[in-house]
Image (tube, rainbow, N blue to C red):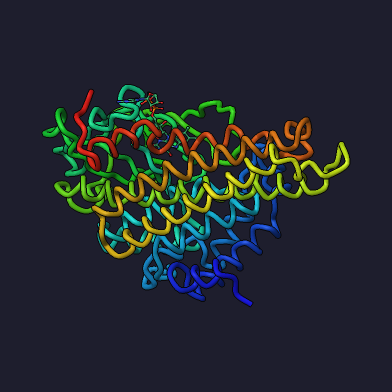
Length: 396
Ligand SMILES: Cc1cc2nc3c(=O)[nH]c(=O)nc-3n(C[C@H](O)[C@H](O)[C@H](O)COP(=O)(O)OP(=O)(O)OC[C@H]3O[C@@H](n4cnc5c(N)ncnc54)[C@H](O)[C@@H]3O)c2cc1C
């Protein structure tokens, strides 16, 4: 028997194939589970086994073109993969970066050679790519990035100089997609250009930032001083960088929404189970409305955020970059708020157990904050909606 929700999902949002994907990814995630994930994090390891199996099953490349080894789907499919792995306790941050940002940018704008070199490996998980845009002195204001590429007259290639910060997964990525600007566009409004920088390139230095974050993906500072790159390191066209960048940033926001929703769902499930069985007076604690209502609220807010994420993925996959931009920002905002609130309420529901290692929820308090900060903070989304959607004047 299908519930009303089930009918709505299948009629409007989720085809049979997508529901099958959701179920299969969920099964994979649960087979590994939270214990696997936290054991890897505690040992300072990466969740390579899960990554490789997800790649072999075709889940990491569901959004990439079939002719390059992908599944031929879109962000709707890839966001299902991240959401379901997160809901099973295994939120893989690098999915936001490698297939969603880098895979999309290369698939849409890369040269044939770049597509052949990168997409099959990104799709099957054998190659990974990190993404570096944030700079220490620019932060939320990407227009201020100063990483600069100048032509090397001797080789016809590029010399790249700059600093990046908080770049995730550099140690396990074969290359990093670096956002810079060319020398003739050094100041003023950002005219970006994107470079694929191999991890082994001489002069490409990275240093780990110690984070209070229980995640397998680590964050790094990058130091580039006249790093010599071949001409073919440039992605696509030097003059179309902004278009290329936005083609990657919208998927990043949609996937961060999936990251937050999956994590929120995981925490909420744990809290609901606990609230049903934990009894300290005559009835389970879940019968007290002070416990039940915030959990119900968390569920509603996660579902609402999910609808917005579906809308953003739908618009993006339909090729409406403009519409997707607004929807992706709103989805990321709503999901990050809902995810952080769900985790906070889940921890509270467990009382003292919310902070124990055994129940494993407390580490999500930090992890769930990531969605509120990265890739763009909640304030910058509120700024975007104020200025672009509501046409309010700008204060900065
Ligand atoms: C776990 C993690 C992973 C990350 N991974 C990557 C990655 O892979 N690649 C990458 O390039 N970057 C990555 N980042 C960086 C992330 O995108 C930045 O942290 C984010 O864009 C915010 O920049 P900032 O930290 O410099 O904050 P700042 O820009 O310094 O902002 C600090 C605070 O001031 C607020 N603020 C700033 N300007 C305004 C304004 N005009 N109005 C109102 N409020 C304002 C912000 O909202 C924020 O709360 C990651 C960050 C984290 C935490």
